[in-house]
Length: 277
Ligand code: PAF
Image (cartoon, rainbow, N blue to C red; front, top):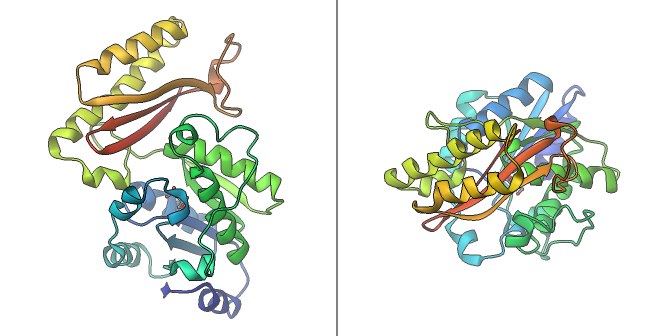
């Protein structure tokens, strides 16, 4: 069912028996990764809201915002084919932002100053602004995030605590295509040739995982940069960080807590991925 504003969606739910609400925030271009998350929400809640909104305040480059893939009609078709009861929310900017399309400023205890945050100014303020608005509108019991955007997930966890929001964050494993490439709306902008090169990203991360047992960080870094050196994958960053604090690892006491994170530019497209070590 389609709702273009939160008022109509809320009054629809309010006329039905009470039950847990799951919220899956998306920027559209629904792919198999989203579908897995949406199915999880359908299993765990009485109502599942899928929002489709390309949030302007999280883009630092206007060009990236304009070029972000959009096909709401196709998205609605896919969602309806999964389950007719999905509550699809496709707001105009005014429904969320009124006439003040600005991000708020948050303190994420430094979690936003590295990786994506250092390449995309105020990106996470924009993400948190829209996620907080969605939570306040629909008061979901559960909100769903994919591990592909792992830093985003850690920051939203921080937001939920800081803003006393009574919503559980449910994390969902990254879905990959056959080549290992993490599914992302941006993949639709890769050429076939670029897709082949992009599959090197996850292959490299898998090798990092096996080398992490016996090589030090410096050697792993060298390995990663060498591996992608003669390809079109230009590394923006590669880090091994504690997955809760996003702090660099010093002395390894517990391997399970670390994750390798990578961002790569391939032509005009920026791709990110991560792996639990
Ligand atoms: O991950 C995304 O697609 C976006 O950052 C989100 C969470 C929908 C907020 O706009």
